[in-house]
Length: 249
Image (tube, rainbow, N blue to C red):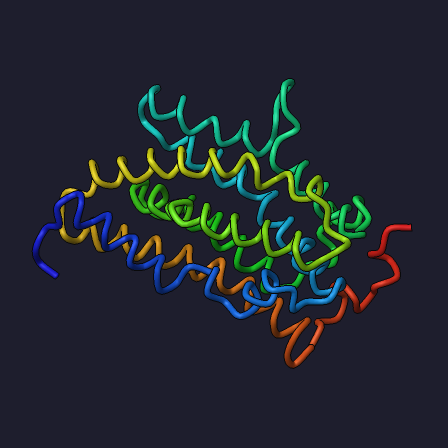
């Protein structure tokens, strides 16, 4: 494509990527939301997703250091507070740990990340490296999956509460804050890429960055599906290969 898109056209192209590639379409998530998983499979999801959650502020700190102006840094650093917490709030990582323990996992085991799948570690680390190594424009654009997260959060909370008697509203408290945090963050990132993608090549790089992030999320669910659903090949050392160390109590 050689034509420059208007800001609205660029936004539409970004949203089209989400409509085709966001991980709410993945078979594992469809099972999760519809009650099609057993307790061990839900635990595996919570455990592996913890690694992603724990690395988000690492990614954001890397990006924060690259922002050249005070105003942008002030906005972006709120993401660190949202996930790491501060004196007033425990933060998203602590809330995800509460989810993991709420479904029956031991907190120390979860925080060790010893039982996560290799593909989880590879995918999440690839995302952190992408934000570190690519252009600032691409790094910001890769966060734009947050445009789509309110929909999946609503589906996830309603579905899990309806179908799993071992999941409580308190365990899902992580998602309450994200319903306001994610749209706020997405609004800034979208405005940033619309303002700074000045050429067709830059706009295509923005679209590719969002597709990459969708692939990162999708790959994590591919790993969960293959290990814990079908064909059920759990890698050596991963959760349920050493299940007795993973269960609380």
